[in-house]
Length: 313
Ligand code: GLN
Image (cartoon, rainbow, N blue to C red; front, side, top):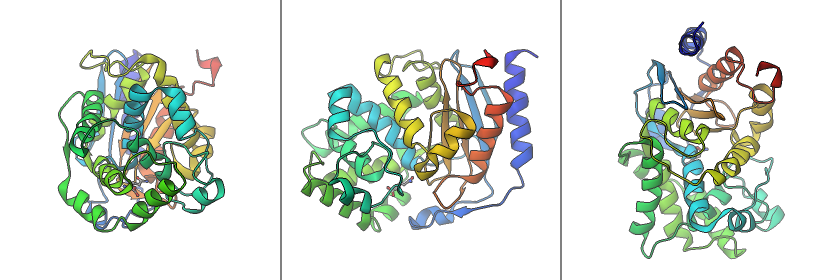
């Protein structure tokens, strides 16, 4: 079968197989997320030569949530370099929930990674700019370069999370007290909350992950987005901590660097081959979309995309 037909067949099969699955429930700690239609289910795949395959609700908009951590990390790497990110944030799994305060206490804010909230908010604090507006421009600009189009913030979700994010503010202040947050904690938490509320579709996320699969050059726009030397760093953090405390389980099953968000999106990167994204709002106890996860696991197996499986080469 030609390559693109294989992609098409794998996506169609995954969508058909999990279409009726209703496990999990919408995240509700951000009240606006509870209102999303739980039946939505979309899958998109973009190859490193820019070909796109989609199925289901791939064009439906939802908030990027924690998947934004990948692109703000890209921004920080580009601005301060990989050694500074390692020294100031860390690159180790905490083994605890993404918003654990205990994890901060155990290490006094050290040995975090950019994908748990303390490390992610600290990563946002590294973004340069004289004013919050300037910093925001850089963060949003990086997301837009990855997606290849202008993006907007979902104001309802932003307001909903801003009104209920006491825990993230506490995390930021605590990190600051340990000298592990590098700008004003409340201003930074606000920027972080805004980045989580960026509105995207599975199609956007597939382009964003294909840009990582393609060494930092957007395969659709043809524009270089970040220096290729930083891509392996980002993929390493995705492999280590992309699916919260279920990251080991995910890597065991797929071998692919990935990142999830409580909005229901998951991206995964098959380096040198393709980026894939799936979206469905119902999440499991760790905060990972049940159907998105199963769909990507299925497609990875169908396409022999586990990079550790050298037999498939
Ligand atoms: N905005 C959410 C938070 O910071 C994102 C969490 C997530 O997607 N896991 O709590």
